[in-house]
Length: 377
Image 1: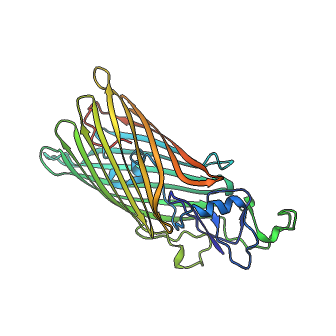
Image 2: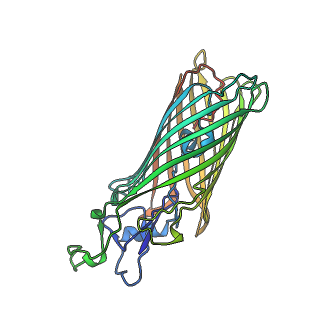
Image 3: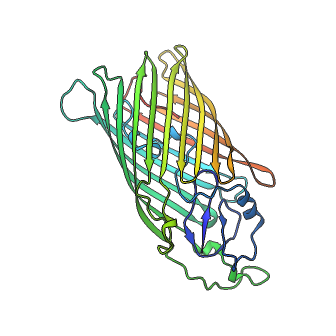
């Protein structure tokens, strides 16, 4: 038996029988010594730069563009009636024939809390669809989740809110055994034989739950601060195709914290620092940087975002810088579009540095206020 393990964006995979990949991919095989005969060179290269993360988590560079994957307390955390957004991540296209593809689509609603009050309390409801695919081995993770949040006003001026959110979902994982090579198939000139491996079911599902808190506040006319924390996988579900593999196949609980602000510089430009830290099992990542938002037009309905940040990580090899990121985004009325690129600083193949591209699109419905109390990108 072995476990797939993956690199720095918290992408692990549960247990399989002993196998070898047909093509290079981002995971590596940790094979029993009795069966270990050879590895492909790309697999060994990936081994050198891989985190041993036994967890499978969503990972987006534009984390605030995917709020329902970040913190359930962000469900309905905006001024308006509804929000719809999608984000797509394309990773390691240069090193893989078929890149790693991650996609999320979310929608959430905000409506007034029941009853009449001077406090503008609100309720948020959200639905999230998520898919992550490692094409080389046809390994898929698909999730659908529902979230509920309550936004409590902390004063009659309604400039501060404390939000509590809960999210529950169902996750399915599957693998295509036809895309895998096994040691006993090797007959000297290639993997042409038949394997005697006994496979477990090639798909399984599990329930998963997250909880989060978030604090938002306005200062001045357009300033804002956002601070949140979330606890993911607090029931630590089992994530193995073979259910008899023991306690080691439980998904690590993840703790994350988010901090951001909007600081006006003048009437057109604002400074937006962003920090995200996440710890899962023995591993940790930190995203830190900032955007500059510049408004255009007579009414400021169009804005340009330019920014960048860095992502250091801690793994079994110590603490180091994993990637630097560049971001450009544009707002036009109710639509937000973001483009980002991660430049990974670890050499993955022949000293070639790889990266990931992300595209996000969001639409905020039924609002006409510039004072939208939610972080962007």
